[in-house]
Length: 212
Ligand code: ITT
Picture 1 (spheres, protein in one colour):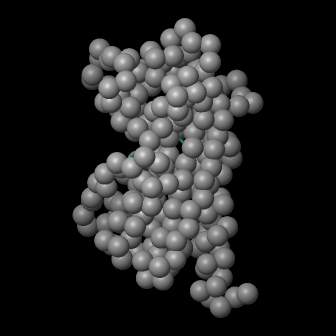
Picture 2: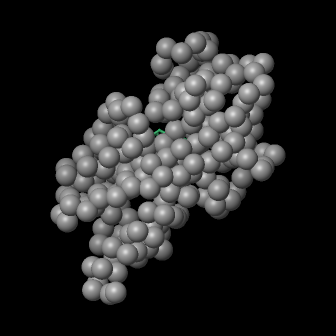
Picture 3: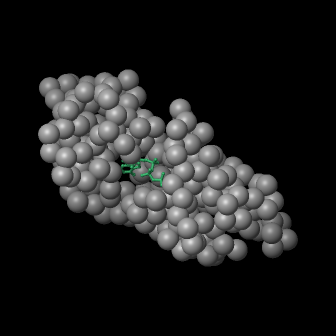
């Protein structure tokens, strides 16, 4: 059996692969496919965006797909950046950027730190919804994961991706980007959601083999 991990984010892809690699199926990525399409994430919830991505790629490539929509919710910003996490730097939300010659992740982090300058309430959480959809059987399901934490005063660490250099997980005194990848997978929103999805997939695979 083949499953397409439909993400354009290399950091996500690394994490998804490392959790799913022992599932006993062939994991493909968008890089293995002939044509790359960007599916617009224009919905208001992680779930709707994740379903949109999974169904689009699955119907297009005629393969079972795992797709995900994730983001960071910051209490002081009423839950923003939320579904805008990947492109927070580009939305009209204050926190003007002077240096544009940076990566998207760096621009997002700088903008968020600017908006929280001097703020005491730095509570935040990563959330994700991971979806599976098989266009042949019509079977689909989704799981979610949350990782609570706070926003640091300045970026630290080089691991992970996205907001990891400024996100301190609850119970730690370092950022997610300072943790080894296995440790991040143990506690992260993605780790939690993908392990739940993996358990469901194991049942599907057993059923396909006719096992009870
Ligand atoms: P795909 O849609 O192709 O999967 P993307 O980067 O656009 O890739 P999302 O729409 O789900 O993915 O955006 C999620 C953004 O939220 C991502 O770009 C990061 O900025 C942030 N994010 C999500 N999970 C994260 C994590 O584990 N660590 C750090 N930042 C994360």
